[in-house]
Figure 1 (cartoon, rainbow, N blue to C red):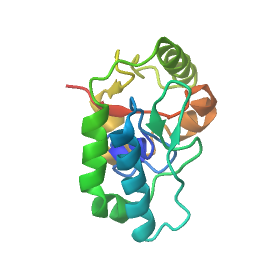
Figure 2: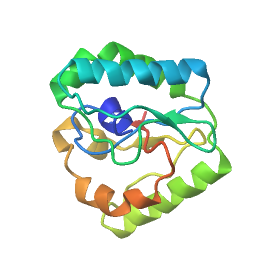
Figure 3: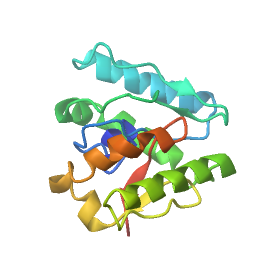
Length: 165
């Protein structure tokens, strides 16, 4: 779900494991972050999604996919898994900016108001640790409607999720 959440970011990227909408990955940037995202975009394009977007950098210096980027098909995510894993590793445990956390909390409130009462608050690194019910790949469409309603509250760079421990 990473790419699905990274590329929408839900193995829970985030966790792209088939969550089908715009779930992107947030990351503090540096040249390595930009290069990883470019590699990811190239891989997705090379595996059958020629119009997959280039990565963008937000005002906080974080790299991610542009708002509205959709997760590629699962077979493409599988083909690009090694790059997705690198992106996910680079983005873990990096503190998010106060403005990012504020936007993610607004997104959380919207998700809860729209029927996902167990949507978690973001961690300090800006990642949502999803309960088993929400991170189960079998339930990948469980909150698509709510996501579409609430995505305007997301900061640039999108959504990063992982299964709760």
